Image (cartoon, rainbow, N blue to C red; front, side, top):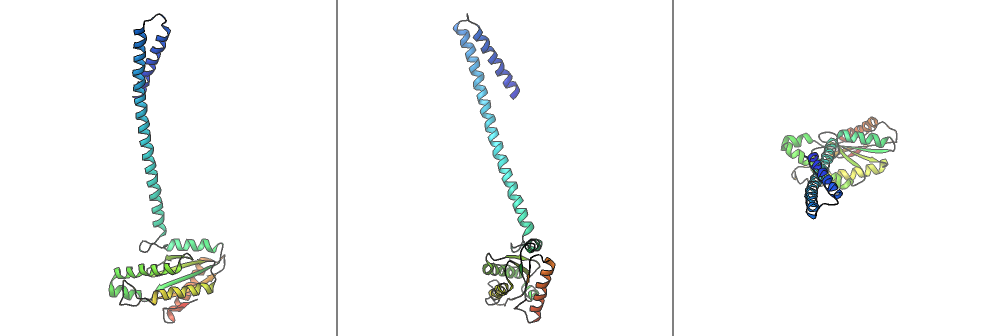
Length: 233
């Protein structure tokens, strides 16, 4: 359609050139040639305007599609790195972050576990257990602030990465976190006490993450063995 249109316009343009070459023609001849050229010019302008509008719509559609693709990519990346129930980092993301941090800086690692969580699920059901986990994450996040990264590495097991923090500070922070959990009833389970046990390790830069994690896990095991609802390192 576009090719035929331009062919027609080129023919009209050539007729106008021929008319210019007719020095002895009358006014009606020139007028006819001018009207023919004007008609085709207007038609060309309408078609050009239509093509521009179509191009603008296409560009806008492509921009919208590209924005949606970027949004979907960001959503997929977020879901790949975050726990579905709580929104904190998942196990894979926690381990990856810890390895990167240990490659260049010392790291305090906190591992915590909800005490007797199976009893909560058995007595009140899994929805109640999920509500406890979500409320626990909210409390941990409020106390932690921007000082570290919180992740869920198991059903009721969580890890906090504290890059550059010395062991004494990490122990003090862990105690604040423990109190935030144990000293106030949970809104989702007001008639049942909820507490957690904490294991803390400190590792210099260059330490293998598995070793750092094993140290924190050993400390957590010790905290449980000493009666739970406590911090060990």
